[in-house]
Amino acid sequence: MLRAAASAAAAGALVAGCDPHRDEDSGTVGREPSPSGAGQASPAPAHAARPPTRAPGLPVQIEHGPRGGHAVALTFHGRGDPKLATALLGEAERAGAKVTVLAVGDWLDEQPAMARRILDGGHELGNHTMHHRNICALPAAEAYAEISRCADRLRALTGSIGSWFRPSQTRRATDLVTGLARRAGYPHVLSYDVDSLDANDPGAPAVQRTVLESARPGSVVSLHLGHAGTVAALPPILDGLRRRGLRAVTTTELVT
Image (cartoon, rainbow, N blue to C red; front, top):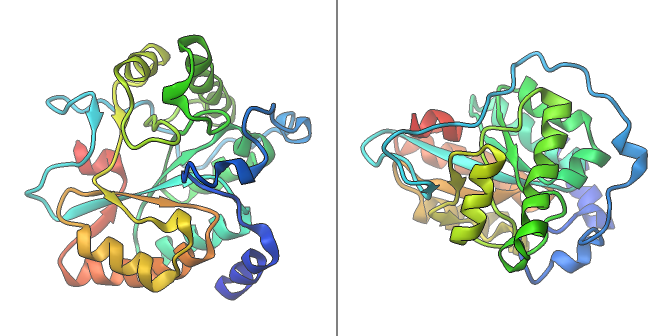
């Protein structure tokens, strides 16, 4: 499946992730989602969708979890070719790892079955805005719409607005965006302390090296669906973490 996924990527199936310099290439910024996907119903997931996570004692904007444990959270900005996404989830599951996917709303409109696929794998699902715009540069009303409309998609597909909110095209949210996220129902904004830089497609060895050189107990690692190099890098990343006594868990498990 991995070779097939990589071939699809080589054929141009990749969709840009969170890199602000590449987001324009996705062709979805500022547009309404395709109506063809919006009306598709997704069956109720076998694993229940979690409500927004509350982590007492941690700041509103979370960059990492406790440093004294033996876990890290691999978090994926959710967008791109569903074949690559499915291949990546399969790699995680074969290694006994759980991940957190922050889904873009228009991707869920186009690929509603992915919400169930993520949850059925025992993974965690959250909100990464509706259209992946530069949310910190938007007026308040537009920024709130980006958060709340993705929350509506998640609720319709899973019964929950998702465990986490992560802002788009930025590592950290402004105070305004943090307040809007709380208004939409998210007690925390999920940032990260390790950037894999995989959205730039540096190749699997570079992604592996970047993650393993930077991750430590409690780290929240930023990665992306929709990139063949990330799929190829995941097994050696998980193996490298395991050799260091670390396991990949959902962000909720990491911080609660």
